[in-house]
Image 1 (tube, rainbow, N blue to C red):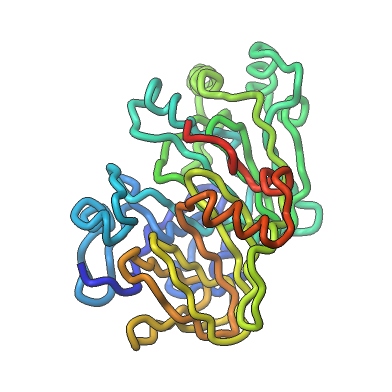
Image 2: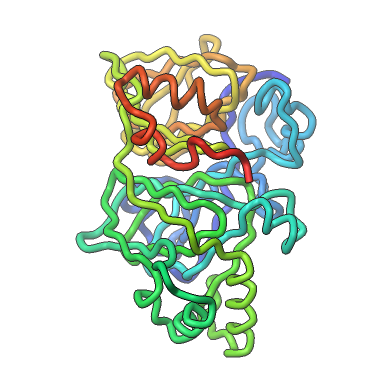
Length: 355
């Protein structure tokens, strides 16, 4: 496999909660004029699989590349049924469904899927007073929760948190959640599209759902729920600061880590596993093997593991996602910055094994 920065096609979701913020606030070009809820920046989800647009690998799907060149694309020795990461820009112009995604165990047991979906939201913009719903209050039994979900009385049973630009929410599989209205996020997650939701309307077009169907959906949701989970908004931790780049680690766990970089000058970067780059600032460039690749507003690039090194040409601001070695990529550099283990643990499942 020839390793170079890969530009991918862009599957879109036009769900009922979407609006125009990805185009108007982020400045993403090439979107249709109508409602856009989600742009799937890097996707190997069935039905939404991206294809390479540039260079010698143009026309190959991300699934095909992953199966044919796992060591070169993802990481030496890595194996899996599909590319491990999914990233999106999501416009919560309206309220998203109250829903959850199974964790690995429930996905295998109840959904016959190879993995579940843990995710994280990095808040790019939120209107004053914007909030999210995340997790179950203590002491709520299954019957009370089922009744509240059927009645749409979410605040009686769920935590509500303020949403502010720059914060990140780590959302493990099995945690009930929703955000919006008036919220714009970047999401990184396990590659999966499984979910169970509690709403009396269809996510795709807002059409009503029959009461009996809603009850069935909520019962399936409750079978996958992990009510003990708690998550709080996190501003991130300083991982590295140089004259050229300030790196904030936004979240971390066994499935993914996400960093936010503020680039002020040329910055050389080495890596040994795949990196997903999303531009959240002004247009900038990165250089690989002497070739410069433009990165426009709200555009993404996939950097294969075999590429190994690139140079960013700032100024600019980007998000960098990857599957981490938790000790090498998270714990050690944060300890070097003076963080204790409790503080590091608040980034997500930093100490947990896969589950």
